[in-house]
Length: 134
Length: 233
Image 1 (cartoon, rainbow over the protein chains, first blue to last red):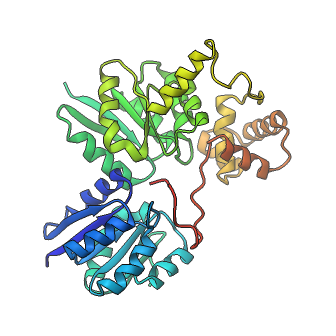
Image 2 (cartoon, rainbow over the protein chains, first blue to last red; image 1 turned 45 degrees about the vertical axis):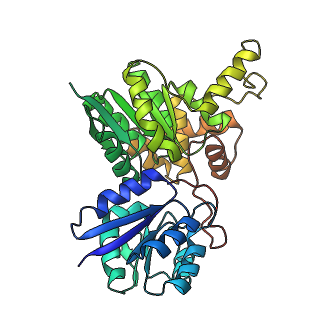
């Protein structure tokens, strides 16, 4: 199944790294990129992706705020956080904000594909310390 | 012949991004990767790359100490440090360590290719802030800026810095001994010397010292109320 993905992280080099992983999946398409929460909201409204891969800590508008906004505006969009915060509190906050998935950046090379696949099928995916906790 | 580059960063996702960026450049290849400073030294000595790119904030052995140690092995190594901050202190330490390139991680997509090209052509590459700081040093009648006015801290040897990082990361003396192929007694002696030199009485003092001196880096507070602001990738 084709999955259209919007990639959001303020570090271009991290976006590039995430792209190399996602592009390994032939059916998936990265339809756009954004470097902060405000740009993410604008591009999501314009491009209508299936999945947004979203960083938490970003300038202008952080990922949690963007997630809350998009949850209301685009209820069909599934959001997967990919973040450096290996913290149960942050994970809880991300899910409360309306995300469907949560992957820790240091494990992204292993967990990202599974995470995108899961949330695209509207399943919850949360992986901390490399373990799926839900 | 291809230019061979060794990449050292503790985040696989960042290494992938850097590799993709560098390998777009015709004639360059990433000949190896390392996820901490110790592995970077091991691989550099084994692979003899033309350029080594090291992240400063890495576990076990940080990028600055890895740079110092590599250049002790062979002063011909050309090393670019990647950093999340270009504070005066980090700039000075990178220059002191002997790095020939200094690139902010947030600007790596723009600057890293230029930095590698500079080193390839036997030049150096620094961010504008580094240039400003160096220039300020010249303008102050050739004095190194503010260093001379800074209070002198006791100097640790390379081995003592290495042990300080490992202790501050939470390793016991026995674990440090095992990591460095030393006897526990030798590590205990170094530990006593470090504590005496710095007039410290607890491991907590050592941890604070290690953070202040960029031997280890702490993550952003991970509480739910503070997800904004600049961060490590």
